[in-house]
Image 1 (tube, rainbow, N blue to C red):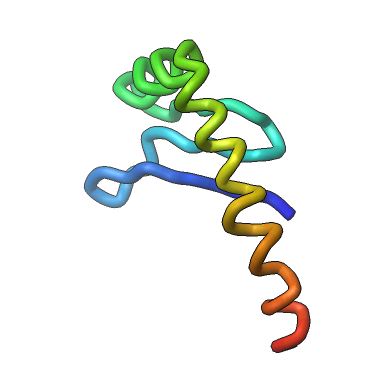
Image 2 (tube, one colour):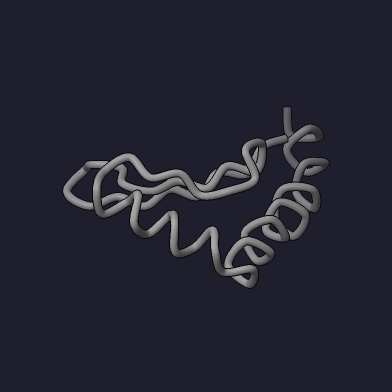
Length: 67
């Protein structure tokens, strides 16, 4: 299971958090700056990492039963 949190502007993805990578990655100049700031802030990283457990792991059984 992978948790992905993406940020877009004008249909262009500029920053993404992936639970497999464990940090934010920027795809534009603005996104790289955001990713650097967010990766240096422990509260942002811990919140994003906790979202996998809070959202994905609690709902995975619901999706498997529906399939």
